[in-house]
Image 1 (cartoon, rainbow, N blue to C red):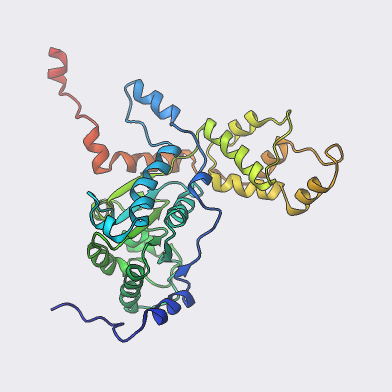
Image 2: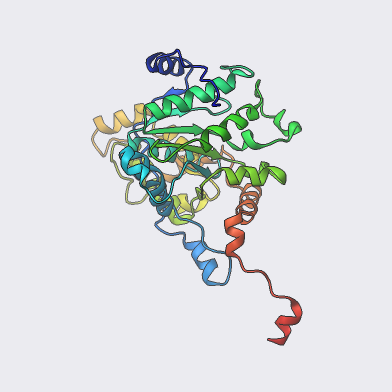
Length: 352
């Protein structure tokens, strides 16, 4: 016998209204589209390492955009009949990367691109609602409404906390409810998704390595696709600074003598999220208004020093320790391990 539906006597309208009131159904950010995820078309440093005999090159920003469009936007954006006939069924996608690397932007971009309903069941977003065992009803309601209002994107920020069983570590997260309380029902609901439902779960992880040892297999095995949002290299940082300044300044460009190369070099280790905050701090609403109102000669010239001063007050999100931990986690992924050949025994190597 199937499990009884605890919301069988509720209408779709009442369930949807309840999820809106609880902050689970949310509006997507209109500016978060795939084109806003700026970076290099290819990862030059990683490609150079690969050519030199190093590890396989990571995905570039452009490749991440393309892959998410292919396995996220297009499948749920098509009709139910077409979705049911697709050769592969992607139910869950993981986006891993440093804080501010663009994971949330990409998640909203998938929803915006498909015109999807957006559900946020992140541990911090649901910490004060559906307390205790009511989380089971919450997950059931979310997936039920998601299927009925498809296409739908179910977003889980800090998804690694859901799968981490380290109780000592979980006490440092500042959550009232256990982040893992939704794990059992999440696994069940995602497993029940069928071709034609047009629902995809997208998890974001800033510290995926916290799911170590026994948690690692369950965590990685939950997702059909795993992508890493890379920390921007020099070329990508230069492109991001240029795009952010132009976007904030309503299309305005930097002066000819603006030291963009210096700014790109000295912002190593910083992610687009930090860079965006710096641009907003320097280009205030008042300054933008004055620049649009005053003659060009009378407006205060924009200099790289202003951005560097604001940047110096912030710690790099992609520092050596965090980058090393993320790299080790990526190398331990099952698909990645399968791509790296086993080292030859010393005796065999000597014979050759």
